Amino acid sequence: MSENAKDAHFGAFALIRNEQGKVLVVENPDNTQYLLGLPGGAATYTPSEGTELSHKTVVRKVHEETSLKVEPIRLIGRFHHKLVYGTVDLFECAIISGTPTPQPPKTLACQFYSWEDLYTIRERVWRAQLSMIYQVLFTEPNVGDLIFNHFIPVP
Image 1 (cartoon, rainbow, N blue to C red):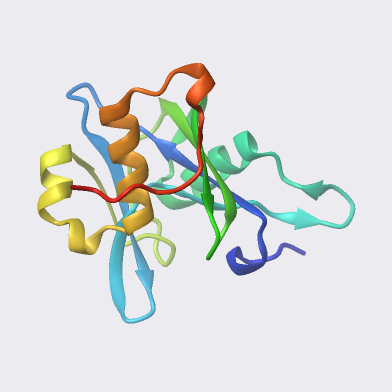
Image 2: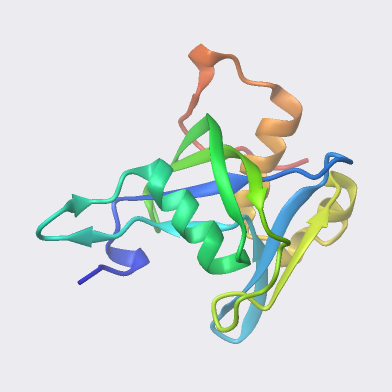
């Protein structure tokens, strides 16, 4: 039995870029509006196996939401999100196989966006994830700077 996102202690998300450097974003149904965000989500928990490791979570969630098979290349950042996941790991991932394809009802669309395009439609993007993308694309964290204690506002 797996717990849902509100009960999870951490989540994992993927930063997947195409050849042009655009970022893969999925459209998830949330209540009555559709919001864009990175593929990923909450880790699962089973009494027999415990909590899923974050690099396994990101592979599973990306496949469930986009049908892609991916490989985590590196942990880009660790963020603290008090309201939903607790700790959020962001992985840079490479596509092993597949084409991004929506997987209803989990996702309604999958598309690569440039930062400029994401910024233009920022009111439709999860704020915390927009902040993660911004920090990774524009602050180029060093290995010692993997932990971001908060989400920064996007200018």
